[in-house]
Image (cartoon, rainbow, N blue to C red; front, side):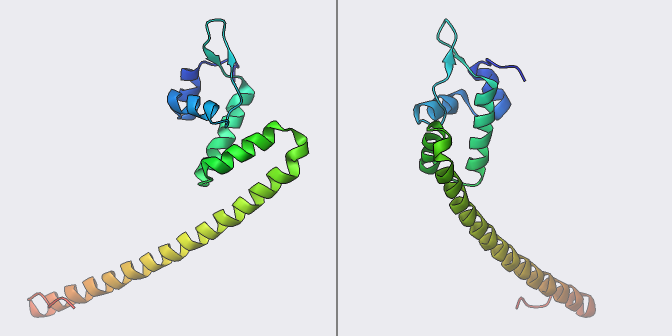
Length: 137
């Protein structure tokens, strides 16, 4: 992957809009990006890798505020490694709890779907037997 990509090239590769990339920089999620002589942003490979990690954090529904704290700690260097690890561990606990809640919800939906399939099958059997539609239970 080449470095020194324009904002439009980074937008195309990441799926983020140029507006979002500029917002991420203003919000401190992305360190100030190098500029070409004309003032256009030029992203390095390391910028793309960091943006990729931010996108993964966003997929886990980490708040922008927490992402900002994480980015600030990252900017402090290796001395903040324990804090960053703790942040990720805490967030992982939240993500796993959310996954468990979604799995419970999915099981409830599956049970309700099966319930309706059973009703539909009994209605179909009643219709075939009597030739009339059975009343809805």
